[in-house]
Amino acid sequence: MPRVHDLCARIQNGFRSRLQSIAVPETKMNLAISNILYKEGFVSSVVRGTHVGPDAMYTATTPSNVATRRLWLTLKYKENEPALRHMDLVSKPSKKITYTVNEMKHLASGRRAKFVSPLQPGEIAIMNTNRGVLNLRDAINENVGGEILCRVK
Image 1 (cartoon, rainbow, N blue to C red):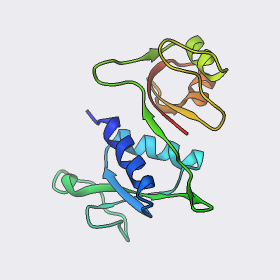
Image 2 (image 1 turned 90 degrees about the vertical axis):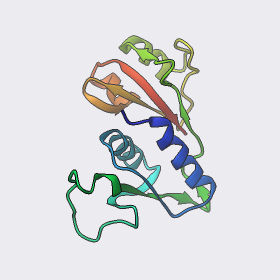
Image 3 (image 1 turned 180 degrees about the vertical axis):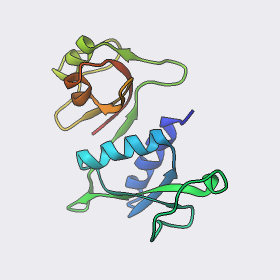
Image 4 (image 1 turned 45 degrees about the vertical axis):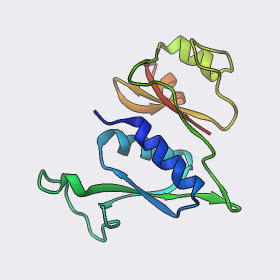
């Protein structure tokens, strides 16, 4: 099972080190979370590649090269400040936190839900639902509950 905490740590450390791009292991979960970060404007691009660098041409992932495949995220900065200030893991392997649609609406509207403080302006939450990995707003629109993975601001 892909570990979300590894992705959170790699992205946060990349921004703190002011790196231009970082490599994360290529898994379906990492790809889905990276695409959400791209759509929300926290990273500039998401490209598949190897452990050496991004691919110039498309290379399929096969069982023989799966260990060397990486996702290359180009980090985004605005006026020399990171676009992503904080990426925090919410649901941990030892404590899974799942929400119904009503609890997610409380979280999005500024009220506390279970153990999680409400979302602040400019902050998103990433959910793992039965319809895939979605941000909180899309999960509420599709009327599906699920596990909250992380929050990004």
